[in-house]
Picture 1 (cartoon, rainbow, N blue to C red):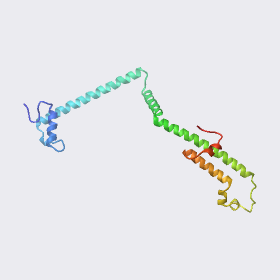
Picture 2: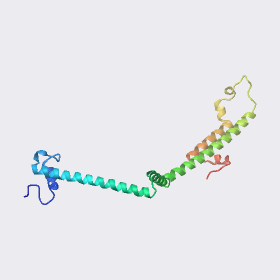
Picture 3: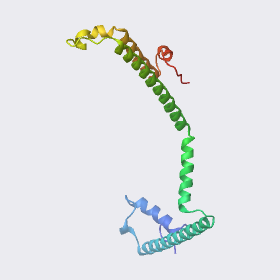
Picture 4: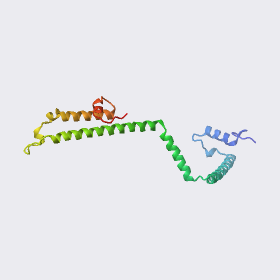
Length: 188
């Protein structure tokens, strides 16, 4: 015997279509007949039974896979190590990682060279300054030379030029010929 909403297709298909058409939230228990309730309860029990069966099959398959891994000498820890090693290798060979690594390496070399050269220049200037006679005790350094005068001294200009060249070299801009001329090491 055919009822409205239940044709040749499975009852759940026609039922959900009928409910969707007649209610705003897709569920209207007041419209369910006893037959509809029985059909839905049967379908729910059948679906829950299938879910339980699939869970049991999955558990059995996982146990079987673990047994095979054990026979092959693979422990869960070695599996994790292998996955991490493979992932790290993929990261290290990725283009962004390589570009970043190379860029940082170059910046480190340039910075190291710049700081080394700056240290040499500072040491040389300090040696030159230590050879100069000290001012008399009554006068201090702040009284012997004004700031504008210091800015025009050869020591200050040389130091200022070196700092500017270091900045240009590290940031990649400007002419670095003065910096390279004073350097005994050149990075490529």
